[in-house]
Every structure is written in C-alpha cells, then in structure tokens.
Picture 1 (cartoon, rainbow, N blue to C red):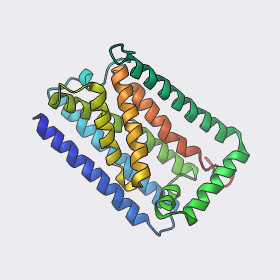
Picture 2: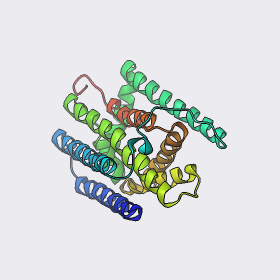
Picture 3: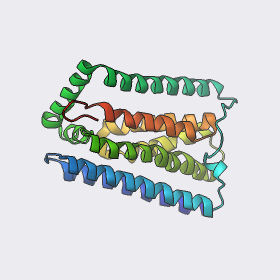
Picture 4: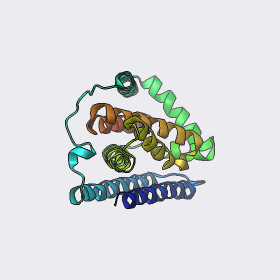
Length: 248
C-alpha cells in the first residue's frame, strides 16, 4: 500500500510539473491581461485545493492518523540533531522577518515601491521568456490581488499537506531506517522537481525552500508553522506592484 501511495505521489509530481510547463508555454508571447492572470490564479487555487482535499481524504480513510501527518500542536523538539533544529528555527525566523519587513517597506515607501514596480514591468516586456511570464503574472489590480491572496493561502496550506505531511509520512513508512532530516531533504528535492517549469534557478530556489520547510516540520512536529511561513513567502509577491491607478 505504501508503495502504491508513493507511485501516486510521483505521478502527481509529474502532472504538476507538466501542467506548470504547459501553462508557461501557453502564456509565452501573449500580453497578460487581468482576466488571464485571474484565470491562472483560479486554476492554481483549484489545483491546490483539490490536491489537498484528496490527500486529506486519503488520510481520513487510510491507516494514517492526522497527528502522524503533522496536524498536531507545535513543539520545539530536542534530540541528537538539536543544532540543525536551532539553525532551522533561526533561518525560518529571519526569513519571516525579511518577508514582513519587505511587505512593510512596499506599503510605506512609495518611491521604493515605484522602483520595484518599474523593474517588474521592464522584465515583463523585455526580459527573458520565463521572466516575462512570471513577472507578468504578478497581480496588479485589487481584483487580481483578491484572487492571488486566496491562491497563496491555498498553496501555503495544501502544498504543505502534500509535500511535508503526507509525502514524509509515506517516505518514513517505506524507509524507516533513514534519518528524518534526510527524508525531509528528499521531500524538498521532490518539491523543487515539481517546479521544473521555473527553470534551473526556480528548481534550486523551490527545492531549498522545500528542504527548509521540511526541516521546520521535523523540528516542530507540526505543519502549522510551515504553512504560515509558506503563505508569507507567497503573499509577499502581492505587494510588488502598487500604484494609484492600479493598486490594491
């Protein structure tokens, strides 16, 4: 049964990577309008919600308890890897502080916000193909941002359920002799591979974040902080482009 679940997760990774690649290919060379951006947000939202819902259904109907897949109170665990745990908490704390500071600066500093907005618009129209698409998908208007917030929330919750809670549960069942942090690193690599449509830099970036989130999960025994930091990372993009004419 565990092998079947692992095969199912691998198929899910392949489908996720392919649909992301297909979306990028479809958007290449197109001027992204508000409706096209919202359409992409809707698809991402539904994909994450359905994925998370299916996994939750498997957890409820299967042998795993909710506590075994990360739905338990946060505990700052101790053990033989305490230095790695401390390093994980510090790094996640610093990243969260950076995200919050970045959002605050965007909101309170119009000149900096305008500078970043200008850079994004330049990349949208004259950057490399992937840069044009990705920067073109950053929300501009209030309507776009409302959809983007929902999408970021769905990603923060559902991707953690899939890639940290459930995937790590399955990996632990199949490879019980491997250290938890090694399994967390493997799950992070899978998370990065699912984003291969973002190019090598994107795979490395998401892979490293996935490993960090996995370490945070192992260090706290809970998915809740992982979900919060993940959401904070995603939602920060909603503040990149703000202006009086197109702001949120």
